[in-house]
Length: 228
Image (cartoon, rainbow, N blue to C red; front, side):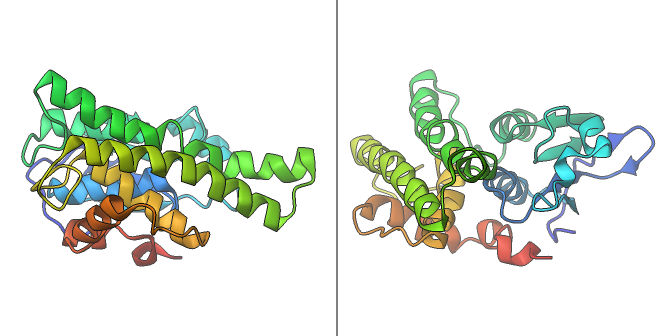
């Protein structure tokens, strides 16, 4: 159970009050949602789904999420999937602190930064596709690591340039406070370090990551806090 408190408990019929996150500790998408829940001050319980054991493909989990993935959040009588959709819902229903700008131009900028990670970088290194490299193409561990590193280099290079263009003076990608782009960045740099990707080429991203990781909401969402 996360230690933050909430004034917005949700209810799923038959489960009683509370907010429940079905997640996996190293899932980047789950990591994003944990951060967002913490930033919003929402108390939540974690139900681990072991991706290595393919528990996400079980009939029980597919009944919750037909896509057979994590995260899945039970809140306000709803079952929500897809990390950006979940965070967008949390921001719309719990607007303080804001994670996505309301101004259309600023919103587009932040969404573009987030999608560089969520749509174009993270999926290429996702466990499902990495397994295919082995099963269909016989890739060894060195080849899979190189695949991950090269895909992350492309995404992080683009995000570094976007962050510099945005010109925020504050330490975060969001300026003086973290926003959706920071929420997406931190799990991706966690992955980059796991697979030994040098980060010297991304000073703006490393600065934002350090500022965000120093906050309790980010630190308390770290995968090491949820290792089985």
